[in-house]
Amino acid sequence: MKAILAALLAFAATSACAAAEPALRAWTKGATPPLALHDLAGADVDLRSLRGRVVVVNFWATWCEPCIAEMPSLQRLRERLRGKPLEVLAVNYAESPERVKAFLRKSHIELPVLLDPSREAADAWNAKGLPMTFVVDRAGKVRYWTFGERDWNAGETLATLEKLVAEPGHAGR
Image 1 (cartoon, helix red, strand yellow):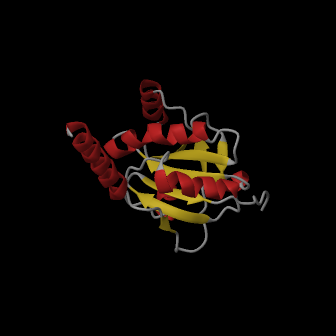
Image 2: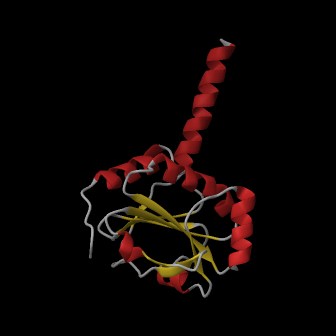
């Protein structure tokens, strides 16, 4: 009897946690904002060049505890869907390249990081809080957004991304 009660309590706790995570919100703000920044190596990265892939655009900072907690989930998502048309771009919110590199080394995070030193990209995307994440479909259109830490490898979130990855792609402009 105790084993059954323990199992029911565990199920209830898991269900409550899963229910606490809100669904990805539909994007209703029009066209996809521009995103053209330098990565940590100084190379130019433009979101338009990633057409044909689903792109998860995550605005974050090293001082943001929910951002730090979410980063491993984003890395696991990228690894889980390796070989599929998906990319994760971690857009750092106004920190120095040295600080970002030190954080990545210490935390063993290996994601493509773009630098937004003047916060112009964050402003264009209306990223007023962190972490804020946007999901861009293979045609280059923002489809969803979310604010706050999320598990990108489970439930409705993962199902939504897998569905977008499976949609026909639209390479080019």
